[in-house]
Image (tube, rainbow, N blue to C red; front, side, top):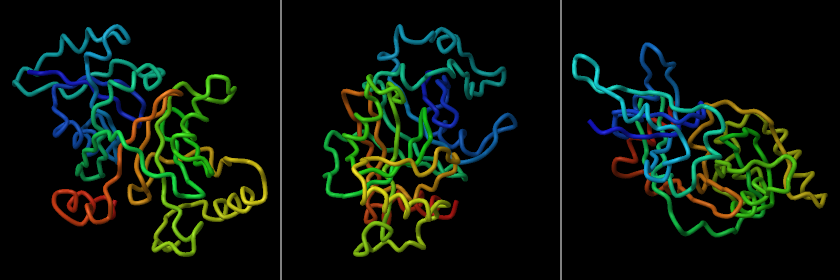
Length: 254
């Protein structure tokens, strides 16, 4: 059997498995006797671009169970995993709902146009604050991964979230649609940014792993100080048709 390598976001870890992505993604969400069920975010990784960075020998020695079923997972690393994985090793991103429905998103070279005046970012790994910013995704990623910053990180995964009518009264997205627990803080932060020269402001320093997929706007970004990889979230039109529609129904309900 083939062996696959994954990086899970919650918790941050490098995992080897005999399960292909189509089976591993639901397994990570639905759980087993050893796992707690819940939403899952994970990346399928290119093994060739991880050579010499991690000890992959346990992955090479994976064997099926005595009954012939595949070995589900073996954790290879849990410490500072994201920062050691080169951007070129990230293949596809998988967004998994509580009931095991998953959406596969491949990287896209073209970034979304920087048309918004304010952005709401959810940092996902290795830090977890929710941040309001005037910086575009590219500039925000460079800002957070600046090697000269005393509070920066070498690499970061973050999502661009919807602000809707909180920031733009012309938006079609009502405030009631957005399940943010810190709505008052977001409004206060907007007022502070409008009246100051600051470019970013932390709204919440912690978050739950159960942030809602329906709050994602443009998509997910991986930044390392030099480059930025974009995983685009499907548009509303794309969510309403085909296999994505089934995932979207599950994502809205869970």
